[in-house]
Length: 295
Length: 295
Image (cartoon, rainbow over all chains, first blue to last red):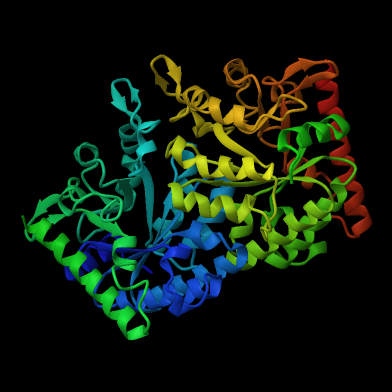
């Protein structure tokens, strides 16, 4: 794969909108239609969600932890979902929040971003706590394979204040993280759009923080969690986006529960009813985000 | 399981010594004897290592990332190794460095520390960057199941200086992390020994930092990486341990390459030769650590 991840993501967003559909197989999210909560049901449900996204969303984000709940069988289900999404031409951001020292990070990087991965994805989320050297193996594989790396900067949970917001020389930790990524942002810049596939997580619950991140990381695409069920609105979710010809641009906005478990989906008694509920929710979220991007 | 993880770990350390044997299936660490580098060879090699540890070491630490290199098949190999170690009565610290917001963290916590896990372990390493609320699900399951949680504080890699050592109100981030863990340390305290199964990673490459961590976290057991191949000596590895009746105590010291790939092991042409090389390396490391603990 030689096209850049950032250019592919932006092409998808310009065509379909900035929604990223989270695939989070909580037991409570899998309707009985797909069977009792199990790795098999999670795979079936995840693949069905992938099919609903085709033509409606450019990007999906499977949540590794909820598949790993079932061990190796859960990982096999995750692989099925990632393979289906890749075959369908969707962009896959694997939300795994990995991170470790050099040689182990190489294992994660090759295992997920490497050519011929059994769990194919276009980008993976990583944790910066251990230091920039622990991110390098991910960036090296991403550079070689035209993939992306998504670094946690300012997350959407209440505990993001515990360490990420602590001041170091007058500036919060998450900004120090962002500053230290500048050379990696340059390495994963897409030649067509100028955006970088070294993405950062900038939670929708912190619009002011997202704007500060944007001010020092002009070209990094953002992955924005927290829209929908976590409480943030569409406009706040785009606080770190920038004005371009067609409106606000600068990343993807994730929704999980609100699009994958809308009213009527959990209790659907037929596949057709479930499909209708999901299609409606995905389309409504894209429309809401599109309107916010134009405003 | 109702005995506390901390008490079990300390009982094992008092009997066998503080060595923790890292099970890191780098392609370069698996001798040809076990077959070409593959999940099957990693499982075979890992189980054989587990057998060498019986009677010689109390604790093993499989490295998830190097198994995940092979996707779901690699995870199945990891499960085999963890199951074999558990059956053999060894204490298993799964080095997975996981971490995520509440409901996802619950997935990881139940998947690894929960009763009936297909990947049984006694403790798991977790990353604190996202905040204390993201550690809570791990601690809750550990409390319920008599397990442990190992939080990254000061890691052994050069990049540990990038963020962990940055000063917040005059004190490095890793100490802020440690301070914020105090209530969790109290919750996982073992009634017999007083040590806590809320462990912290305190790299052997930073003895001064380990001593500072100990000063503010009196009862937390430490997991010390960096001894052996990463360059730290036995005495530096115990800089965060404290004097007790029988010498220094306070955690486990991990060695991976130096005990799992000693001279003669990689090139061994018979299983017996390989076994002899491993037995010698494990015994030598325990002896070196025991001497340092008495000094």
